[in-house]
Amino acid sequence: MFRLLAIAVFIFGLGGALCGSAMAQNAAPKPAAPDQSPRAFTEKVAAGLAAKLPNYKFTVTGEFDILRRDPDGGEADLRTRNFYDDYQRDAANLDKIIDLIATATTSNCCGSKLDLARIVPVIKDRAWITDSRPALKEKGLDLDFVFEDFNDQLVIVYAEDTEHNTRYLTSNENIGDRKDLRARAVDNLARLLPKIEKQTMGGFSMLTAGGDYEASLLLFDDMWRDGQIKVDGDIVVAVPAKDMLMVVGSKDRKGIALLRKLAAEEVAKSRYRITDTLFVYRNGRFVKYGRK
Image (cartoon, rainbow, N blue to C red; front, side, top):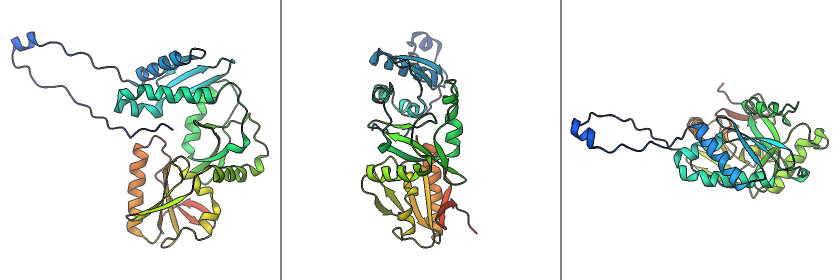
């Protein structure tokens, strides 16, 4: 999956007096800077998609919103916000962004059948549900995402893991018995993920598993309760982004402080941010961590 580095935007002010009226008269006018506003960016993406996929229709409906109409009459709302930072960092990334969205569009449209064996659980913060629901309501359909509570701060959103992207499921889809959905989704994810690895660095450990679903490792109950993760005290974790899971012991005060700092920094810059809240594993559950 195409992934870009975090944004580094520098805004330079224009200032300084002219060195004389003659110089002002002779100086060639500077060309206007290209428009990099959210709306202009989204319009460029829509134009690029229309050129690449002429059988589809793309209409800009907001700063970061594009309405896609498919050849079979279906519609979808595309959000460009997650790619805007990459574009601001380097406008040359625009073509790659368009290619990524086009690939995801053609691999996932037009009534493709849901693959039950690729339903996976995705950890999100509650704000994600609130922020994403308007895209469903704009279609005029009484739909919601398929999700359930994980704890007071986090939810489990169910999705179909496809070759090119993660498609979040909605309440009108046939996903089978909801009673065992979580167990089935966790089993699917365990089968799809590469080997889980633990990397220990200064003051904490990090679990890695391919770079897409690290936060969802919180759902692997056996890993947390069977002593596979050894720390000083209770297990404390941070999941600031979907691809980041950091671990430290509750008795390691320096490690806790470092985890808080790193989680806050990651939430501030990550395209796939979740939360800077820390969680502790107690009585078989992850709950919000707070010093006693």
